[in-house]
Amino acid sequence: MKKGILLSILLVLALVISACGESAEEKAAKTPQGKFIQTLKNGKNTPDKSTYTTTMGVTDIQVPKSNTSAQTLGILKDIKLSVTTSTDKKANKTETKANIKSTNNMLPFSMDLDVLSDLESGNSYIPLKSIVKPDASLLSFLDQATGGMWSKIDTEMPGLKDKYISTEEVASLLTDGTEVKIDEKAYEGARKNINDKTSKLSEDYFQGLEKDRFKEAEDGTITVSLKKEDVVKLLTELRELMNEEAVKADFKVMLESQGSEQVKDFDTQYSELTTSLKTAADKLLDDKKLMINFDIAVKPGKDNTLDTLTISAKVEDTLNNTDPESISFKIETKAEKFVPIADFPTKEQVLSKEELTLIMSDFAKQMYINSGVY
Image (cartoon, rainbow, N blue to C red):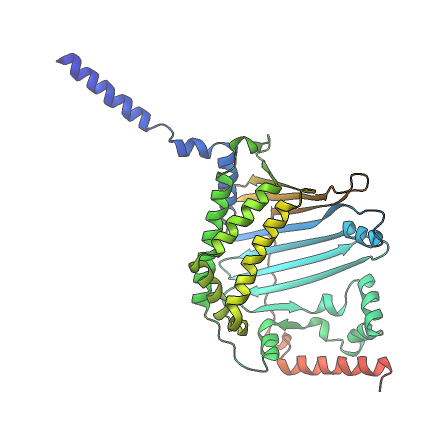
């Protein structure tokens, strides 16, 4: 009797102890695959104040010697794009600073673009300084295209470089003053639905890959490589998701909530989009000479955030082994120390619709006169 009670107590204790251990899900989360998936999910956990920089560019390109545009295509290797975005959630604003730069001797230039956005109103402001007074090399190209008119903008309208363009004013100009009603609540609801479903698709996709394909480095970076067959599978799953009526309805809501007039032919356009995904997948499978490799690497950040996401890709056509054709590119997003966001412009600094119309009209007139066709 006592032995039976003792055995029962020991059995209960064993069950309690085992229950306190790790579940299968918890163990899986500690594997490189589990860490990879969790780090991707953590990408949404941005702090109240954050700055991320994304850089992208072609790292290598091989073009057959018989291709007459080989030299021109080679320029792509010398062009880099950098985008730094700072977000202040409490202040409801972001600032995006973009730069595209070419170090090629045939086409040297550097172009900057700065955008301040009000997350509450949806309005954005673009300072005209970098547009009116661009990099010297870029100004040379713009002058060639405009008959020297671009250089005259600052001399003839010296105050313009201190002004801003508002997306609200531009939209008003393009719609001829017609008020565009934006249903923010409907838009955000549809956008959230689509984001949630695509995130789930991504999580399930990587969960379905073999565990040993995920490699973890000493610094915590986890990498997985995707081949052509993996890309085809992802395209197929994305198409299946988009074929869901609820997803299609959310896409339509996003367009309609912004007052888009293109919704009239939405069904046809949406069908063409989903069909193109199938066509792309089929072509990839059929082309036996086309090789694709994507190395996706993630590094966890502090407090369940994402530190770095890197995609290194190579697409290669092996049809001609003696003269191969390929292109490699790299995209990297990295968390940075928070960069303070500039103040929004005052009402006086923002060009009105009337001022925009006058400036565009005057510029077009001067272009016409300088062309000598009058």
